[in-house]
Length: 510
Image (cartoon, rainbow, N blue to C red):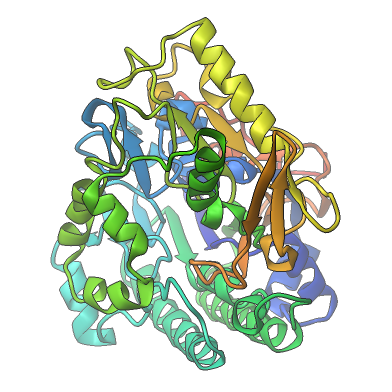
């Protein structure tokens, strides 16, 4: 490995188009200097179908059916319930845990969506300190967390304020995200200067949280043209604060370090239909059959309780308790003896699951012709959904994820049967939804979304590399987020590990 070092700087969900615009305006000077002196390019990402899969795809070097993590909450078929993704039932691990005899010194700070607390390694690993998604919290060595609390205070990143938003809550969020970024910057500088490392990865979560809630003011103003001016300024402020933190970190490095700034997905206006799909499906089924789906008592109660009632209670509970509650309320989501399909936890795209005999213990839909017919029927139904005023379809394609996946993929059984990318008019501008498959159906769209998120994920991933032996210019050859870790391992002269990614040639634009 020689004396090579690589510092990866992740800007979680920092959208490529926003970064481009702010760089062109001179508002991200540190990213701009990296780009002018190095190479950069767009990256393909699984985000448009699997928004929650981007970080596991990055750190495992595997495609989604091979690592299985595409949301923080997943349907666990063997238990017939939803569970928080965890290492006790999903075995996908980061590349850095499979390097064998390579004596690689690591400094890992807030890589999102890693299952379980940090494992012993040659270096330090801080997890869940300032991430948007928190699957686990902890540190290696175990004493590190408390040491950092004593020197920097408790983590500042607030829990997600999921639900109704106000002008005041968005303003408070902006302040908290800037403070959280400053704290993470100080922790990163301390660890990067104190610990020996050859590969370091520091991820800023503020850009992710800001993108969800500061994209526009549609969730404050209600239906109509979103007022983007105030929130655009707030979103840009967060990006600028992260850029300034990066500049401070970079000034503490020597010039021989390869620096890779990157994002594994982006952000855009929230289509909103995945927020509404469970209720929309229930009303569609009622219109089709004349009977509402029979839900379990706890699940029905959870669906009815306003989140602003539940949120203050959940915030006070330990992470292990809230994780357990997910399993409890979902254990009898529906009457499985009568439920042929159901919605899974979802983010940007819609996820539908068939209650398939042989895969689900309580499955009632037979494989083969019956399964294919139900998938086709649901596809037609989803494609028939339209804005009542304009006639525009909410979606123009549906993907059969389970059927399309390699049968040998170890986590194929966790995938949705159908994925619906919402590429039509957003919920924020739609008053009513109709369905040509059910001519009498009419769904009134609420003015605001249950999540309160004005932004949601896109596949706008990107990277900028700067350092020794790196060329200058834009890389136009198509690469993917799955290629990032293989690229830095090659630079460190570490033998490739099994996976689906391939190194990017940083020497010159492709």
